[in-house]
Length: 421
Image (tube, rainbow, N blue to C red; front, side, top):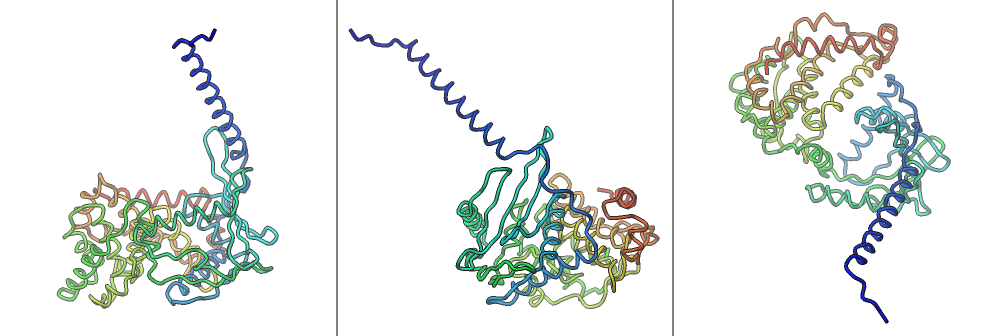
């Protein structure tokens, strides 16, 4: 005779099922961790960049910019050493000091190692190669777990859709990159990058809020108008004008920093969807030099670093400022300048605090009444500059050395004392 199971028996059955399911999930998670995590990094710490490596990265960037500015397909080639420099510098800009790029047979290989708690490492690898039709194929590996190309390309497609929804005009990968090849000297491809892709502005918006082009235009045009009506070459006066009419919001401060960079250095640091040219053509440009502590280069260092921080964050701004000096220390350059570096870091820290919700209003009020000595201490002019690469290395060893770090800490301590917000 059949017996109907009581509720207690059903409860025991459900518990056994849940326990079994939980064990299966835990087992799968354990296997996944074993496949993806490692006890050691797969790549070492990238060495401090030399002036040649910085120049290599700048050359590649220049080729990409030409392809972006001029519509249509353009051939871009990069050597293995140039690509290595780009990847290592890019990693440092993101705060990742273990990144490398090299050749792996018939494909290029990028490697990154990220530290995790409890002494574990997440080792990532990305591979680029050409398929039979000379199309770019990207695959990867997380630890020991391979990521096939079709999954990588599906993720790229999804990411593109996210950026498109944010206003970017980005064609599919296969349309932008074609005739891809891997050679003895490096990588090459035909590239078609639409001029008004809004890629950089869309990417910066993913970080913590995009730059508002309308606010930038308003700030920039007002600054040009004020300069025409009451010319003044004091950079502190221009900073004061930029922030006097602001509302102290993070968005407004960001726009003011970018507008200053456009006014003084002619650069929007890639934050505007259509570039600065349209706004400059409509409102005009600054005539005559701008001075900070008797020098015309320091306002450019300050304003560009502030704009970079507003758009891409302080890590990128600090890295780019340091690399600029490393490049200048090479043959034919003006030399490594701690004075320029001090101006860079002053602009970076002003924008860093000015784009934080709890400090944006007080920073705006402070910048609305600054003097030149508030923006950069007069004592900064006594810092070393004009150092060749050999002289810099003899004195500091590298930009990663404790000696150089101590010099930077002294600069930062002076800048912190000046800040009154």
